[in-house]
Image 1 (spheres, rainbow, N blue to C red):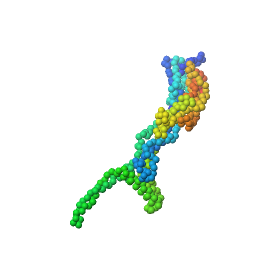
Image 2: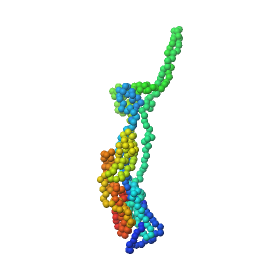
Image 3: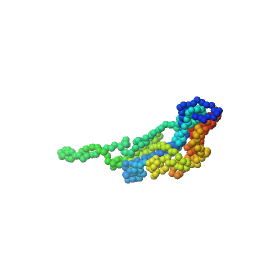
Length: 373
């Protein structure tokens, strides 16, 4: 828990005839405090499926009788979940100060670390803080996988080539021309790789059938399970050369959205199945917005520009926070929204003369209790 910062300040008061007069100040003292507003942090979790075509997809139907579904390199994004969390921050439109000079009566203010008003005259209120660990994950630098036969441990990229070569030898008193081939190695062509991959796929399938029929006298149980699993992996690798493969990763993004008016949707982010989260100006992508509906303020509006010294606090608005996909409401939650409520004042003269102690909810700026000391 964070410690609440207590500020003791000296407040100017217009004293009555019976009020006790304190020491006269020669230097003015001023203390500032602020009221909070709420913004919403959206943690968006997405799954990206990277479709990687096999290098020999054109030969799949002819050689294997299979039609590949992946024939181009592309990404497909899916929105998994959205977490909406309220964050309370200082409202730049609700900053107040209390100053003291000449004759004064002392009061104490209790402020949170953010500068929110928590209490007056020993009132403590409730602590608040929006601090947490920042985490960063650079998904863009993750290694992108490609289907390549060169990665297979069983693959040899060289093949033997026999060059025509003849020598002459004397056989039965007669010189005869004899073929004496020279062996050299050269890199396999694409068609060599295709034929080898097709051959391996059919070989693996044949050997797997023999194992299941117990023709190779392999013992049942764990050994057979391991061998069959390895055969499945080998076949999957070779098939990926023709059918392609999919690589998935989870991506999280965080955005902050601040609703301004009741009933007015504010775009938090846009999402596209081809690009994931995109710029809010990308009108071709689906919008996800926040909107406050059915807002109720349980107090009438008060003029905050009074001349008498006072402590200002909020009566927050209460309503429904809606998450929209386009115009469709996909999630609704109750919400307390300080900035859409009204600001009220509590005269400091009443606090001092009556010996009152005030407590506030710092994260809302609202009054919690009024007690006698």
